[in-house]
Amino acid sequence: MKVLRRNAIRVASAAVVAGLCTAIPAAWAQSGGFPTKPITLVVGFSPGGSNDIVARAIAQPMSEDLGVPVVVENKVGAAGMIATNHVAKSAPDGYTLMVSSASPLVVTPHTSKNVPYDPQNDFAAVRLLGITPEAMAINPKTPAKNLKEFVALANKQKVTLSSSGNGGLPHLAIELFRSAAGGNVVHVPYKGAGPAVTDALAGHVDGVVVDLPAVSAQIKDGRLRGIALANDSRSAFLPDLPTSGEQGMPSFVAVNWIGLIAPRQTPQNVIDRLYESVSRALARPEVVKRLADAAVEVPRSSTPAQFKSFIAAEHAKWGKIVRDGKITAD
Image 1 (cartoon, rainbow, N blue to C red):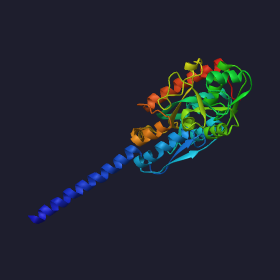
Image 2 (image 1 turned 90 degrees about the vertical axis):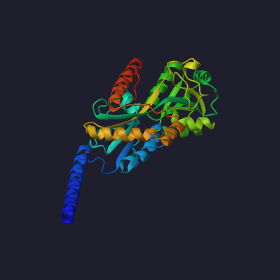
Image 3 (image 1 turned 120 degrees about the vertical axis):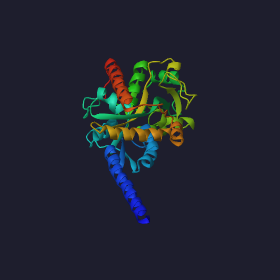
Image 4 (image 1 turned 180 degrees about the horizontal axis):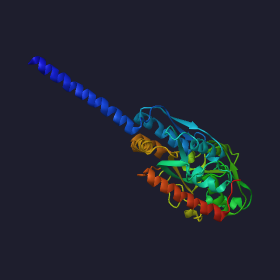
């Protein structure tokens, strides 16, 4: 009797093990075994800009969630187009992704004649990560205390404004400002927000227009004088910084966004896995705080389908602005 019981236990145990062995490969096949190796988040601008800040904020939480290293790689140049083209031409397997701002996806394709990728068809949307307006800040030695005085200065002499590169959203914001202000406003492009801010701090240019995160710390500590937020409402991160509309320039409005994209034809199950992972990362209090400290607002929700529709709408919006203003980066 005992022998029969032991045999029954062995058979039952073998059945359980066999069931587990069957279930594990089935689950593995369903997920595609993703991920099994490091994932790279490509950033098209230099360290210190908003894209880089967001990428580094989500990299470690995603790594912990996915069980593989998630690394950030900066591929700088051509207003983000070099990095964007690199991701467009990468294998659609979920291991090469891009943390992209509006510039290379919905602005540069309208301002440049030589875009080597199709912004509407070469990518799969994963999730909108953050939103931040453009900000104008000037060197404290520049003789202007606010936007009105800076406009008056531009009508008396040449003023220089740096940006993170030709054809990007900050460049477009400067063109919007020049159109509204008149005067002699000279755009000085750099390879990323970091160098653009650095030269404004050094006084090599009169001021800078970049995403708010790239200059929020410098404005807070007084190393740069914030004179305008290019938005129709103030930011909770810098509540004392007046908007362009408040200062009589409502047309000077440019709000940037940052999102996660993958090469087109990336399998839907991989997109879903990445969406779930980055959403969990953005829900972590320490990530929210890190982004808030950098003046980046996290959207409440943004599914891959919603983000895809958002990109299409932004592409149409900025295309009209570029055409109406006859703005070019070439």
